[in-house]
Amino acid sequence: MKFAICPSSLEYASINANHFGISVLMSIANMENGFKINLDDKNILVEEYGKIIKSRNSDLLKIWLESIIINRCYIKTPCQNEENLQKLIIEITRKPFNCNERNIISNNLDSFEPYRCDIETYNIRIITPDDAIKNLNKEYAEFKYSELKNDILFAIEEMMAKIKTARLEDLHNDILISKLRRNGFNSIYRIEEQVREGISKNNSVGELDAIIKDSSNSRKAIIEALRSSSCGNEDNDISYHLNKLLNNYNTIGMRTNYLIVYCEAKNFDQYWSKYKNYIDKINDKSNFSKETPLVLFEDTNSDVIDLTGIRVGRSIHTKDGREVEVYHIVCKFYYQIEQVVCNS
Image 1 (spheres, rainbow, N blue to C red):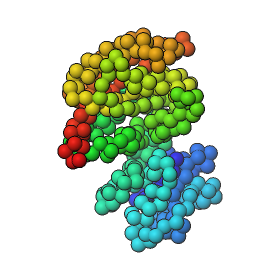
Image 2: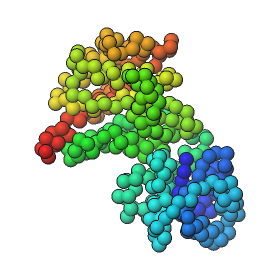
Image 3: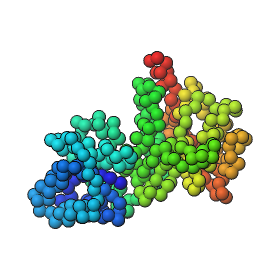
Image 4: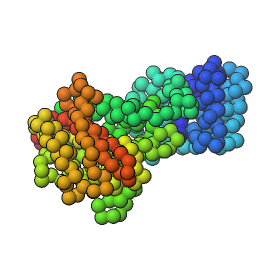
């Protein structure tokens, strides 16, 4: 994982040596942990670090900077913005291809507010030193499926709040993944989008929406998403995606996975009733594998009791002699279809 360290974080570390300095900064400087910090090719940030170390007379920060350089725990990136420090930090942070690598640790979040547009465009995460402590300290690194499910529901709720003003193509899965990335950094999980792995329909390498990993990079869950406007007896799309989630991509048998359905049907309540009936009969579908038969499907709407536009169900299947579960999160996206018609 990569970080850009804002100089304000070093000032924070100078008065919180044990709290942030040792548990975060020294952890980043330990080459065995695999962390890197983003630096500019003109050494502007290093010079800023040096000024703080000198003014604070901090032996800890001096050792930290020396360790970063000696252990080569850094990546230097060409930059153009030499006059504005915040712009420079954003410029070197936005370069990594993987969004999980675009992180800034800052003790002055307000200083980045004028650049909110760039931050959102490039999916940059700005976290406080306290957030960094929670994520880098092994003591806090316990993965919780309940937190992941709540984060998914919260991200979908945010998306739904905008569907009357957004066009269909603007509500693609990348928005959901982007929101989960921001939430996930505080919940001890990481997201990799559209990972090439598993077995696809023609037995070649397939593509899934997202795979969830814990802080130690161990795989924990898969998120599969689809758009649907009907789920009658003749529909094979839902069974295809559910089978893909359980069998084609879940080759190591993760016990909990998530199927998200963007419902574009006009009558949402009727769709949910048909959906439950559809899943109850999933074992009869010719494109659903007998290797993971449905044991039980239950309505778990207590998870979203206050949200009328989201339904949640839980299916239990057997796989290799053990039970696995899938949370079916069905959300109302009919309004976005209306908006597309109005704008066309």
